[in-house]
Length: 415
Image: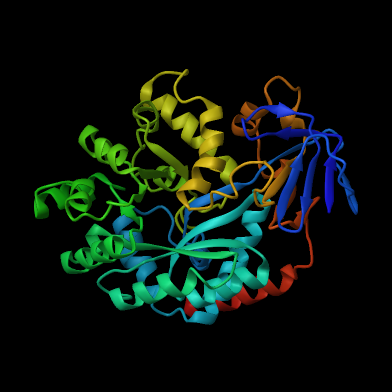
């Protein structure tokens, strides 16, 4: 058992306290005064223990294309540069490339990712071997995967390992036939399960969908009964009030990816309007080929800054709400309701914020400092499932040189 003491805690109510926190195995067993006997004492030395960040949308293995196809609009970037390289990947590549992403997640305080990619067996094995928590979904489209595989994956990976779970999903409306989307809807209703996909990322995507189907992607998915049990839409940039009513009525998550959307000039999701309407919200980095960083601090700041610019209002979109999106909101979106806060019985997916870094001083408002001035350098410790994997800038029990070497070998081969 580990006792975290002599520091600060961001508790389940998102208030800063001086409580002790006890972790036994993979769970938090007590918060506050306790007579429990700890085998190990972790002296926080005035630093902040808080729930970890969860990355609610990414393509981890796309580390192969980091800084490979930059400075292009979405469609040429995807069809001309990314798809041809993806066609050369094999399952072992996914294993090696994903582990590189896991390293970066740890440095950003991210302990779980919601990954949409191919070769899920390789991704699941990489996650379990590494000790990383992964929720997977399918990139089903007209070119890859099929409905039978989607159902197979759903059943297999929801009983694979405690670190692994699986959600129904497909790539996007513009890459997926009506027949396939109808099939996804049937599976959603069969299993009473949420569905996730890219949606309303660019203005052109929405206009094309309206031209083809007479309605926006959001209204199309709703008309197919795809969100009868909730789900989420990655990006959700070009959505109108009617779309947002569907999000609210169906409990759909708008999963915000400000870094990727800014870099690809896709637009700014109306987060402040979503907050006012009571829409469920989560944050993802998107993949390392379009962002290019897997950095939750940058995402949080960009969401805050772009909303203020978009609304022309410096009071728009409070930083504390964004911090909750990156922790509780993303966890709930991913189905990780036992990994969301610091409370007895919750999973021990925790991070320590170094309050002795210059960017965290002086202490006026800790949570807003995290969003507005925090960066990867303030992550002092990252714990997943009760195990410390990153501490004081070092990866614990992980051969980083091997990971870098194998990832580079993949890139050199396919490029």
